Length: 338
Image 1 (tube, helix red, strand yellow):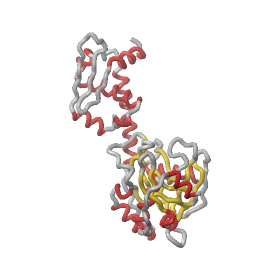
Image 2 (tube, helix red, strand yellow):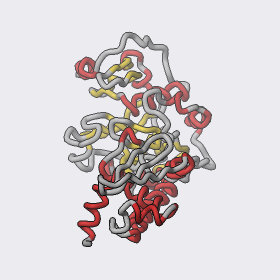
Image 3 (cartoon, one colour):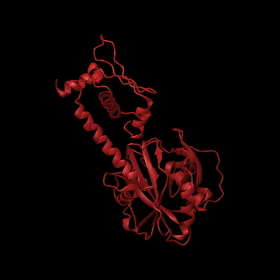
Image 4 (tube, helix red, strand yellow):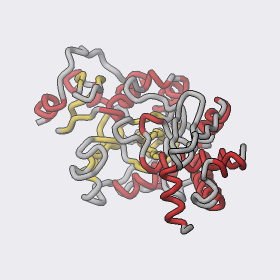
């Protein structure tokens, strides 16, 4: 039987039931009694631990195929005779399944290596940022965001953002932000920290964040000193896990939007402007997001970026009293921004 025909037969032969404690493999011949393979809860925990299966709430076609391959390989490993009885002996070759699973494991290992850096502990923290770094290091994830949860397992999509703070001006520090291009697939038109998705050559979140920031804003990587990593948070709309890299901009230089297809504009926003009570609002969206936001420099800063900035204001000791009045929606906020 050809590989294509075998694959089609296996697709028809396998019925996966990802219940609390078992998977079921049935014969392709409906006239025959189904053969069940019951898997212990330990197997599911092991698979989850190695991140071979994505969360069922966000299961895609590719992950469904991987589940089928894992189930087939599991049957073959646990009970070869039952695999044959189930009609899987002429499914996609076992060697192909093993090869696919090895590729997936290699991707998982690559992601694990990327996530391995958890704290950078620089030898010297600039004096204006000492209190902030200490406070952020001790902060719990829920003190940074109430909308974006800490993921139970690593998502397939990993990203890092650069929270780049400069201290070269007389008053309090400022932070580098960018407004994303309006035609992007994820978070179009939003104001955000520079950053983006992990690439295979990146050695840890700092490398990803700095590379992306240089590509988007023209910041000089040599002038960036990563200080600490923020807790990894999951962004539900884009299905990314995001790691914030808090860094000091040692020698600021001019920055601008390098690629108009990605970045609309770049701005340095003083924390004094963020702390101004007139620039602060509570925002609520129709998607269920509710939290602090800023109307500054003709833009609305909300979402992950808005919550992190609000937390940095508080933890850095720069926050001023403000009235968290009734929340407004995003359209109202943009009208305020002008």
